[in-house]
Amino acid sequence: MKAKIHVTLKNGVLDPQGKAIGHALGNLGFGGVGDVRQGKYIEIELAEKDRNKAEAAVKQMCEKLLANTVIENYTVELV
Amino acid sequence: MKAAVVVFPGSNREHDMVDALERSSGQKAQLVWHSESDLPKVDLIVLPGGFSYGDYLRTGAIAAHSPIMREVKKRADQGVPVLGVCNGFQILCESGLLPGVLLTNESLRFICRNVSLKVERSDSLFTRRYNAGDVLSVPVAHGMGNYFADAKTLDTLEGEGRVAFRYCTSEGAVNAEGNANGSARNIAGIYNAKKNVLGMMPHPENATDPKLGSISGKPLFDSIAEALA
Image (cartoon, rainbow over all chains, first blue to last red; front, side, top):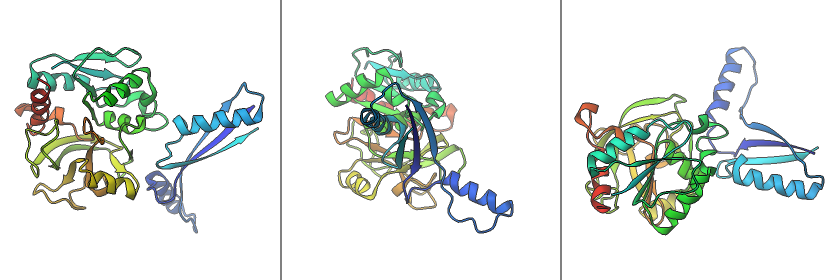
């Protein structure tokens, strides 16, 4: 099983990299670009076959290490 | 005073820290490699500056979970003083010993210069040789020093007198102009609830000798040496 994890900054947390990307897109002539937010995408191969157990384990990984829940949200997709 | 300075892969200010501690205490601190699970019995633990693990994932995040940090947390809970400077502060936040997190500087630039700092209180073991309101000149060297916590946490920190230092102008005004990196409420350093753990972004160890251009960081090490003598 593979876990696909997205980690994104919470609303209201300053995202200077997203801002810089937004500016650069504007400089390239792309119109209509609104707020840009940058996040992380992490893939993890899991030996676990049980979907519920895998989900619980990945959730712990996110809480303990992969995301800092003071500033970040995460979503997990198992495939 | 016996001190241990923890070294992570990517730490780079550990020797400056050892020098500063020796200047004030007369004793050489021990360097301890991060993969050790045993920490010598010491009076002070220091997490120095640098870029542990290349700032992978989030700054300080990987170091915060290295074997030695379990022991550092245990000692901190027992009341052993812990000082984290720059990356050390980031690691303390990621490990949960201090609240909040350090974000990218508001300017998006790496800042390497002396900044003005206001001392908030002089009754902690780290600041007893200062007076509340003293304005210091101490270097910073960071790209991610922008302190962030939610409003409730910030109110708690201020309500419990846990702000150690604030960025200010050279005249001591705590305002947007004096805020080096966009930190919430100009916060440059904070204590834990028991005030035995201090984390700060500026480098007091690099302001302990006239040859370095400022000695306003020296009273911090004098304070520690005096308190733990």
